[in-house]
Image: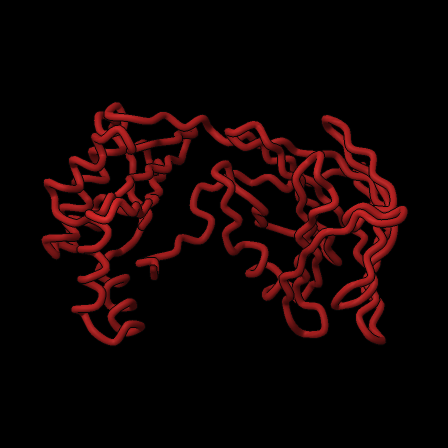
Length: 287
């Protein structure tokens, strides 16, 4: 389902911290081009279910204003925006700790394009993309050996790990009693009513501008209104969803995610997720 808006890194936790101890001799051979990636930064994201994701970012230049993942597991678009602005090349490798053979590999600005790759590799001396890997609580070092598209990736690296933990999710009617849910309900009422001025006061976005942009993108105001109706149903029904046993919420210092579950007559379900951020001490909706 199309999203009404996208917020670019608003109040998101920056997790790719600079470190003078990080070192990378990794290089990517893309056709005739040898791309050196001397900067490496590592992040461990601990999910609320206990699993841990490791994210390694190798870059040709020092990244600025880049968030590889926020406290809710969202990657956002800051890496793509930085690559486009800086003209640098970058490689991002992700895997679940303890299951290194399964990997995700993204390349940015390599041969003039971005690629999303991944797979499973547990044969021979290579596991995933690693010939060697030493993973500790606050440090990661190893040797890369990857031979897929867009070309061979190899070299040694050593980097500290910044750890980010996902907030615990709470579930049930207590979600609807929270200040965030009350703001979200008021926002839903305003959007369903078409009161964009009131919705903007409760939002991190200018909802009038967002409406104009989405009407242009979707071709008609009626299509946008249908999406709003699908998400929020009606004020009374949305309030019931926020107070139901299926509602859930996770909260950090500056951000909140709320999930509501809609059940249809055929017993199928649809989950909608809404984000809120604290701006100048007040909760605002990001939808």
